Amino acid sequence: MHPSTEKSLPMNIGHVQAVRKIVLGFALTIGISLFAVTNSRYPSGGTVHEMIEWAGIVLIVICILGRTWASLYIGGRKNEQLVTIGPYSITRNPLYFFSVIGAAGFGAQLGSIAVAVVFAILTWLVFHLVIIQEERVLDDHYGVVFADYVKAVPRFLPNTELWHDEPTLVIRPPRVLWTFADASVFLLSVPIAEGFEWLQDSGILPVLLVLP
Image 1 (spheres, rainbow, N blue to C red):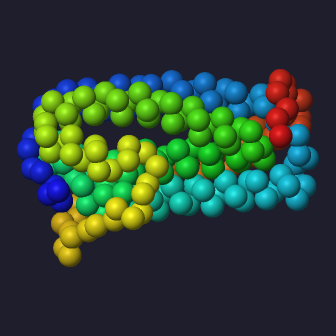
Image 2 (cartoon, one colour):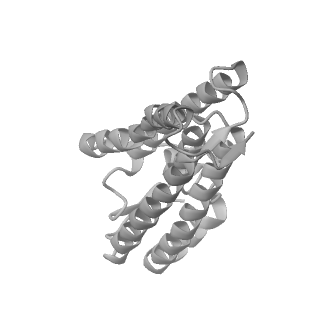
């Protein structure tokens, strides 16, 4: 399989990306709304609560580093070529994979494993729908090359045995830095969660759900 195939994509891939942003924004609004009225069954400040929160921070860091790593390969190239090396040799959607990990870390800042899992599942569902649309565009555009890629590389969960890379890589710093900054937004979950906990403890916000 060729490491990459150069060919400009039609504008409908941009349309798919625009829809992705809208749906993600809507899902994030709903998620934060639920976040505001949900609490953990584990007391704030307790060992279990703190362990879950710190595990979530680790997941967020993995998300930031993973998305930045993937961006080294795909940044600025998505509309120009089919990238199949590096992280794209072990999963067709590494950016989305690491985003799901980050969403779990976001939810974990409430000190609840259940919330972390729910956030991860909801994010995966959104990306799954987007991936299906993207694959239709890629299949129409790259034909047999993309079909071979689909057969060889899993859609989502990485298979590290498939790893292959190139000796040199052209990096586009602005795209990489933008991805790093974009992924770092997940860290806002820490002050957001602390703020909601304070509002709940103060009786300003009601607690409608208590989850493990």
